[in-house]
Image (tube, rainbow, N blue to C red):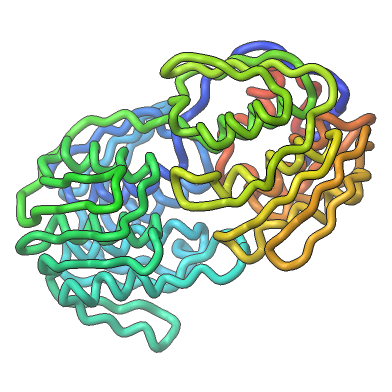
Length: 417
């Protein structure tokens, strides 16, 4: 069994470059299916979720080559339109291949996706959007069978779902006519997908706003693209520095993508500043409790950053209330934090963190991807040694967690138990 051995109590100091965004590279890899030429995608992090996406592309018949952080996809050899259950269960984001395969082939056969158990995350918004585009879908036997070439439509999402927005965008690129997505998700990863699709020759406009318009039917060609940096990885390292103290610099991350997190860390007592692509954070002493943190779709406070910020605020002066509006089971890190001496009370989707002056090391198990990162943050600020297992969750979204933290002065190493 692999584990991270973390010795806490050391302030962080130094500079790291933030790797490419998991939530951006996955839909971009799916979008490469739509191109008639070769797609070259840079800044692809070495994640197990990316490995799963590459495996799906190869199963479909695409030629895929990886050299460092660059992945080259040639979809001209695509010959399948089905994705087996084993590959779909590897990650929640596997559902993003539905719109791309359907758009390219006019047919798709998938099972339901896997991923972290954060509570119900129904894909009904994905399917209802495709049905509105004229696609026939049978999802009654534990699988999803789609037939029909999508056509342009007026789509109105009941909530700004990132995945449903992306799937509709991909299907719409091959649709006849114009597709308008209202109440679209506004996340930076949606904008990055639009940039990639436009590089391929698609006519997509409005990403980053609540209305996205796609004029479909264009023949898409190959192209080259660089994936944006991962704002959640950046939030993790900032939370770690806030918790452990010290001074860190994050390179290659767009500050505007993290404004709610930066504002919260400032309110907690951190000094935060930077320019367009660099963030600096300094912190000394205990953090202060902050105003209630309520997760929300972008540009609100990101649900993916909530566990790490909570971990940092476990050692603070005062009380902080967290309200989770996105996922039902987003507080799965709390029982492990309690083992370290945290004072947290949870009722439904509300968690009340009463700051304590110190945490102690413990044997910990990552409950999910962001929960595992949160436990690493807490361990860095604790007294003594912690052992963190369940790294298969963490490796889905962090390409070099221990290496980057070591570069910042943390005492952390991956070991075999």
